[in-house]
Image 1 (cartoon, rainbow, N blue to C red):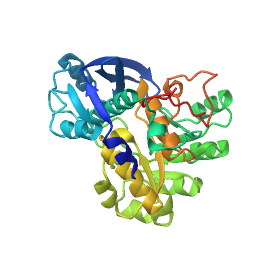
Image 2 (image 1 turned 135 degrees about the horizontal axis):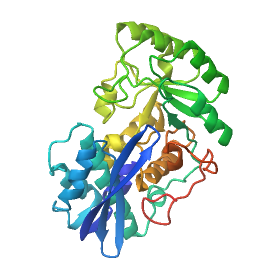
Image 3 (image 1 turned 60 degrees about the vertical axis):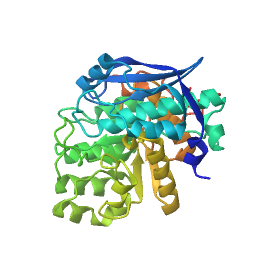
Length: 349
């Protein structure tokens, strides 16, 4: 039985629902806003988190309030199919990806509620054992870029590993300084972004320096044009994809079969699509790791929970929330995270 089939027929009763806004300034120097979605069913409640990045889309949802017809008795799969028929944006979102992010908030809240109502945990329902979660910390290195953020975190948290966003202003000396730390296990080229603050155009010189200098690192989201494809031709087994992937159709459309994939649950939107991706990757021997979206509430724990069940030993970009602050303090949990599933529901910690 596939993982999703173990969840699809769970009964789900919704009597009401509500939204709560959360905000915090995070390490990429922006004010992060998310919205908690709380589904209520009698005495039980389920929570999810909308990680849409556009501030106005978050505020519109919070002002819009709970106006969709979600109350009633469903199965988890039936509720998902109800969401297929609803437009969860009061106005057209500013980013197409936002539809997936918001859908995930409702689906994860429904999973949490259905499991609470059944008196089951996610791990118990799937008959899987949560395992310690290896994590990395994702960083940008400032302007001008410097290895100092990495060094500072390593002083406070020896043994930490990193996923770094490479930019065209990385100098040979900076790359040498980063190599010397021995702590960089993944590089994100941000090649799939357009019109954002993290855009990084294809840069064959940067790609070549990074690929040669970090011979074992994962190389995520390169922008493949003729020049960069040629530079990375001998490194395809290390190339991974994240931002372009919202379904298995996107995986099948990649320029070559991947060996690595960053499976961010919020990018897939529905539980059905997410668990299809896990099964597809397992069947084809594709190594999966997880990624986050600067979650501020229970969404972070939920992706850590999924990592503990499906890909605990990978370089999961799911560090505890304290690492996302502008100045992470001493005393944060170290990798790997000890399993901490709730007794019931889709809750971690």
